[in-house]
Length: 304
Image (cartoon, helix red, strand yellow):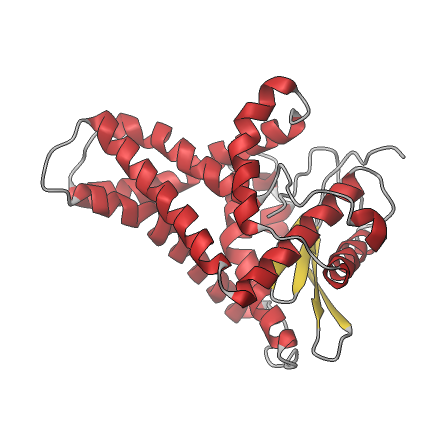
């Protein structure tokens, strides 16, 4: 079967999977009753269909929102469904959804961008600019990997990581043109070149290159520069992710994407058939919703 010329992606949530296309997202969650509950929401047109979605480097901001904002909103709703309270918040749109998304975005920036810079800036001995920025990058990487490893040891999070594997398997099968059946989807790997984990690892590497020319500013300027650099770092990282995914089949690219694929072993688990069934339902819902407005080949949705 011919491979599809455009990409969908998503994210694992509590007892389910979020998938999104060009204009809508669908969250499928396994309720305590055993049924699969699905909710479909439109995406913000200004972010996903406006000019910013087509401008290189600026469109990376939508990826950052996906990784730390949109995903948190979907996670909140899935938590309600998982405990049998899917009507508690009535979805993830409106002011609460935007606030929760913003909290996730700000929290991620503070934890993985500002805090490592503060730690290096407070060292009582001088470092060369090169060593300074390399050390900051290594601390940022260690914090990210350590955080993923630590939370992955929690049983509930391990189930989320298994749904993450189901999400990747489903997208891999769809992009390969395979039928979306549990048996066929289970044959595909749990790693994906456009995973949000790959995006975060790329952010760490790019941050070293972007921040190194700034030298060693004072502590207040150090913090401010890291916050202001986030859009630049996100933009460069997203363009690299698009480029590497497009050329993932080439031998010279494999060593470059190897670390991100290896890191996904921490964020994915082999799913059971029921988890794959949920992921398939989420993707099929998005595909059905998008039937009347197929996205162009330039549209990219990053799997996380």
